[in-house]
Length: 193
Ligand SMILES: Cc1cc2nc3c(=O)[nH]c(=O)nc-3n(C[C@H](O)[C@H](O)[C@H](O)COP(=O)(O)O)c2cc1C
Image 1: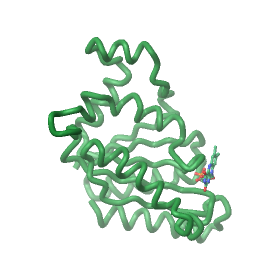
Image 2: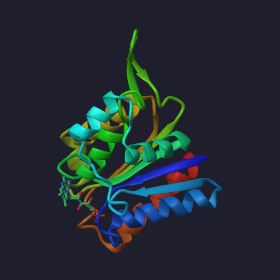
Image 3: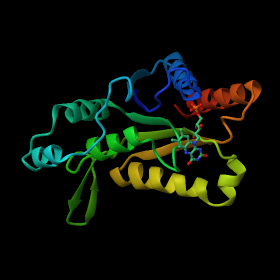
Image 4: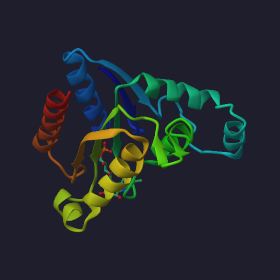
């Protein structure tokens, strides 16, 4: 399968980067093709600005958006890897979705409602956060995070979410706990694909 991983973390030494490496290695080991779009590394411009909306209205998709859309078109599976920031996506990834998952590419308004233009693709999301997982489960935050990304972004455009992993208490976790998370990531990626 062709995998596209969209990765958003500013620090190459971060734990999220270790998750990225684990995911890429597990997929390649099973013979999958993997492309990584590291949004900080490519200096992705995340603000949907008036020039973008004017160009798109005129049917001319800006080049940087077109490039990212081509990666999505070629992918069978789209994976987002990011830390939870202010109970959502880091701004650079939110802006990627704003600009790249555009009207006419990812969705459209049809006669019967929303046309999901990315149907047939699968989606995986891997998140870390600082709050304990049990706390986020208990107050409904985990469910909220899943609703806004799995349903609000992936399902809205027709992408089937096959798994969404959320790992809490990451900044306070010791070496053994972090290793265990990477093992869970590897196991999931290996068993799902
Ligand atoms: C700007 C910012 C906002 C954050 N917001 C949240 C939050 O809303 N909930 C939470 O549990 N942790 C939050 N955190 C903590 C990060 O999610 C956590 O440090 C990260 O997932 C750990 O992974 P890393 O070591 O790869 O950065 C935030 C961190 C930053 C820098």
